[in-house]
Length: 393
Image (cartoon, rainbow, N blue to C red):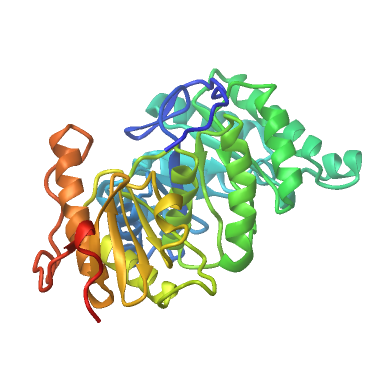
């Protein structure tokens, strides 16, 4: 896959638990649980689901004392670094630090007492726990809103720089910052401006992005633009949806930019009048099967016709291009043979397993063979070599 060419912004390196953030470490993905944190079982179930899908760290809300009391178990059994989301209460912040969380997220507009900030900074420094300053348009200091007239990019950045100075005043430097805005151009401008004025690691996100219909587009544009410019160290796709979807979208954004090699990159044509079968159904079947496999980084293509299919997917590791009653199977840019429509998915899966084994044998990633699905590997009808022509109707 072709990678972005912008030089990455060099930020200071911090650690959230065992996850490095900043420097030249990989871009990490974060999400947030939607459970009541004091319900330990439900919260851990969601944390584990997010981690399984690829979340590198998970934030949990701590609005009440009962939530803070649940943190020791969640931090110990979560399996990924746990970040406590704190608003207003220095007491809850201190309880979270004592509970063994791996990071704090503080909203600068909600904790104003300098004495409290000093207390939290010193306790976090003593324990080696980083703090994210979470600036957003909805919690700016009223003076800044009055100064700029509205929550502009400049207002967000001024708030962030001020909060950074408050923590650094107490010798605390394990900081990351977000300047989220629901307006995508404003969000992009805020991060660009902040990136030019500090080396603190940046956590990217479009706040209140909405349901997946709009939120995925907003997040892909906002987060993707900045990452393509080399700006950003961690990301969260904020969606009004199951948080697992946030992680999936975040992975796709990183993979689309060549910033994450993890499993498969799925390419499918949008379909048109040339399609010789239902491309939507075929693509869905392939994706459902492939998602259950443990694959090294590889690209898989599904095309609906023989006109542009092989050419458009020439760079794919494996692919199929449908024709009348049969489809063309190809691998590593070479045409392998014809397959009946009812065998297309199975044939593609079989080829995926072969290519995955070859990639692993050559040291191209993975930790063992691909997971063999039930029913895979049983060739009922042979693939017809190219020279023999398509199978008879």
